[in-house]
Image (cartoon, rainbow, N blue to C red; front, side):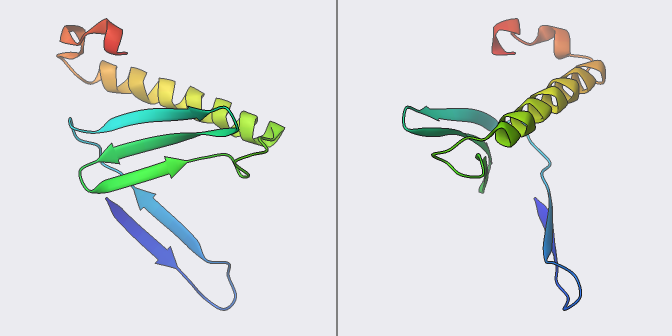
Length: 95
């Protein structure tokens, strides 16, 4: 994982993080009755969580962001499959 923190007096602080996932990476979604879900990506010593802006009050904007994330992840998986000669050997149930 790599990250860059940019800070200056004139510009709002920003953080850019890149994850290079390995074969040991795993992704899970935790769902709760009393709050929004938490999506977690683990790989080695790195863990990243994605959650709605306000855990107990999921907004339409949160739903739109989640749908956008789902579309991007589906495309990412498709592109990875195109570039992996052994993708056909993977268990389709794991998809």
